[in-house]
Amino acid sequence: MADPMKIRASVVGDSTEVKVLMSHEMETGQRKDAQGKTIPAWFIQTVTVAHNGKTVLNAQWGPAVSKNPFLSFRFKGGAKGDKVQITWVDNKGEKRSDEAVIG
Amino acid sequence: MRTRREVLKAGGGVSLLALVTAAGWLKPGEAAAQAWNKNAFETKTVDDTVKALGGSAPAQSKDIQFVSTPDIAENGAVVPIGVSSAIPKTEAIAILIEKNPNTLAASFEIPPGTEPAISTRVKMGQSSNVYALVKADGKFYVVSKEIKVTLGGCGG
Image (cartoon, rainbow over all chains, first blue to last red; front, side, top):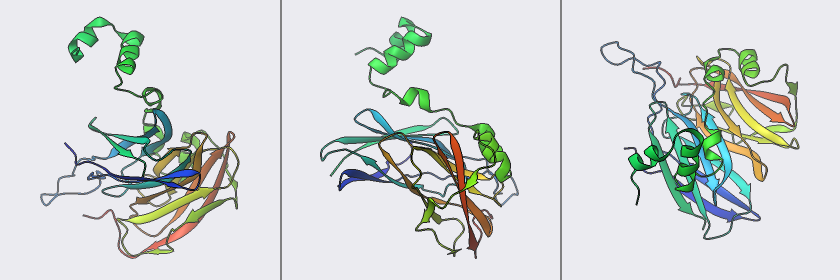
């Protein structure tokens, strides 16, 4: 099981700023190991961010996104104490969801 | 508490989806959104990527800007890229790296209420033009920037 995401959500003016750091190898499938065998691709494909059950961002990623991916964006609305839920799914079907409270 | 097996037995197809949604496992909107665009991520040229994302011949736009994106990246494995669009009704933003093995690095769907500005970090195999592609009101716009990489991010 992958490590939890580090999520920071804070109110900035009339928007909520979300910053996420995910824990994932993001293996490209281009690299070879010491024996010369290709290391299979392993990367996050989709990311969904929801605020109070409403989707505020959908992302689709390829293996070119860096290891331990970082993402930041802002959405309108959101109040202190609201919850932001982030879910990712990788190409092996593994999934992780984490929640943060807007501070 | 119902087990997953019981829920599965209770109904298939659409009714199962309704049950899963009702059980709070999936938030509304999440179920429909998550089909990874395999075709687009397999493209190898900027033109093909734009086509796979449903556009053609995107117009150059000064309303798209790179934000906190370096001209020279010392480490190709971690290149910060920020894209901000001032085009009204921006629906989607994609980051394309011309000289990577696959051009498309990431695409973001921007629902109404979300600011059309995102930042992330990508890998670059070598110095390359990087394109920020924006879909707004059904039309496509693009801006590009060269990023020089001193140490590639795709080597072994």
